[in-house]
Length: 467
Image (cartoon, rainbow, N blue to C red; front, side):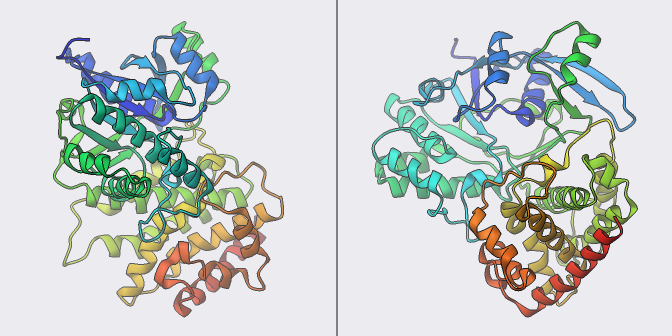
């Protein structure tokens, strides 16, 4: 590889990465700018069949793009030029990440995979994190993002690989700042003072906002791709036509010219990420929890249910927009228009995005997506009746899980099942929900929160009676 060709190594080669960051890199390369390419691999033995198919296809795969009017198009994405096979010692990822031509290491691991508590401290009570911390102390790699990055950056420091940008591509507020804090804390706990100093001097962690609805590939997708293109693609994916990436322009060793293919390179992503997390992510979860309770399978079904759509609409209109657009801090986005676009996107029946996918990880979404609006409304002395419906829906959803009555397997990396079952078994589950410190931090047990959640839970019970 020549010195003029640079690599972005991505950790977590799931559907979202391949429908989002890899697409932007593909668009850039299609303009003739081939100075950058992607390498990708996983830190866990995930998606074995998909990764094998990608390796067999040289990293190429087919993207099916679906518009809200069910127009479908197909494109071969060829920006991932190297698929790194998984091994428990992460040898391949470490080798690529330590190479001087690798100038960016990006990652997608989901919100719960950062193990941050309500105060942005590492959750040392997590068994996975504790195991990886001990492994790192022994100089061994681990599967969590901090342990993987520690192993890669140790090798990079030792080999003189030079500066590298660490780019978060998850729905985590202030994601670059927070992953940097988590990583440095992890390295401190490991006791590697040399690496700690090297990371401070040789890395940057831009904040970024990512957006594109990317459902898990349905079994029938492969057949559609074959019929439309003639490619029998074992790694095909589907995404909606909407796509957005906003990045703080804080790269320490070069970057692709993404601004030429639609990426918004900005000084601050704060307004964009706040709007996206509260208007899109929280609303998505609202519809998934309510839709599950109503017996629906897909997001679009709940979005077209007038009662569920009203819950989502009222939450944004009554509580979120007044928080994000104030006379003191006017929002640069047209929030009512953004709300309407989001609901239209969720109503896209062609996407077939499942409630199971979107309902996952509620224990990290509660403090990340919902509690900030509760906190700001109360600070302004305003009602929290509309936003309280979301945790009330999650509680009803969790109670159904507790009774073994969900129609699908619920996945939640941040949930301690014993804590969740205890909440549901409490004499008053609403009080137990309101008392959960990881969810609400200093607001846990606040009488205003308890009262609003009781009122919202009664509303949710009425909703479920009419299903």
